[in-house]
Length: 360
Image 1 (cartoon, helix red, strand yellow):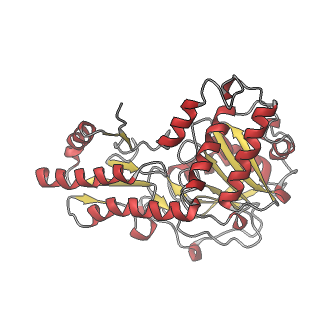
Image 2 (cartoon, helix red, strand yellow):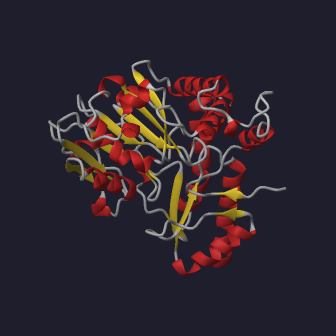
Image 3 (spheres, helix red, strand yellow):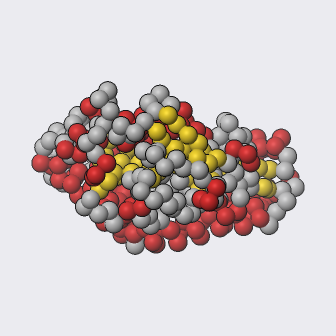
């Protein structure tokens, strides 16, 4: 069976090697006579899987011992509420940098819990750039500063980590975590939904500095209390066991490829293939400021949007799917996460050039 080139923004393509190994282990994991999906989360087999998964993630990101790693159920959207519930610590103020739909949603959710303030925004240019740090207006008594380091929908990526002095920096890194090295020590908290670069949907990873734990709002549900989850080894309730197992396989795949520095080089090469076609053409256009273009999510427009349907139909005929832009923005969007092979991106670039010759 031949596989298609899946450019979905999420749930997204997974490494073929990982899927093959998971398939081999589906009915009988390492001679246990069980699938991982059937294991007790407190049994020795799964406890070993969970421990090794955390170990490999810590190695990939060089996460120091002073940070807790949590494997939590639910999507990253759940963290829009969990972050203020855990990190306000009695201060009642939180600042936000708004660069697209996901940072807007995080801001909107936090309004139910605290006094929110927009420290910077790129709305003035349709959320097509990352505001320069010197233009941020952070309140000195803010409990934390939140931003989305890669906006999946708009394709805006911060290629730098903001400095926020003593105020904890919080990043929603869902759509580019593990796409390259990340200095975790510059953050108070990083969270990411799994369904882009980590594994199947339903799992969220939270990396949080230990000194920020233990001061959750009194109304915080126990399953959202980071301290309780950390103390329970992310097993306060039954975790997303199969998602954790799959994440562990992805982490091993990343390590085998040379880790995150090697992955960054691969991702830069893949993105260049598409951006080079766009930049050499008057038929295609990227709305995003060149220095802030995402390596993971590439939105672009055709010279005539009436051709979008034909472009998508032709792409599907060539085995390329999920290229339709988000419903809020329209156009075309190619998500080229870690697991998208360069051959798939090359096929897209070739098709873009061919389509322009025929329709331009």
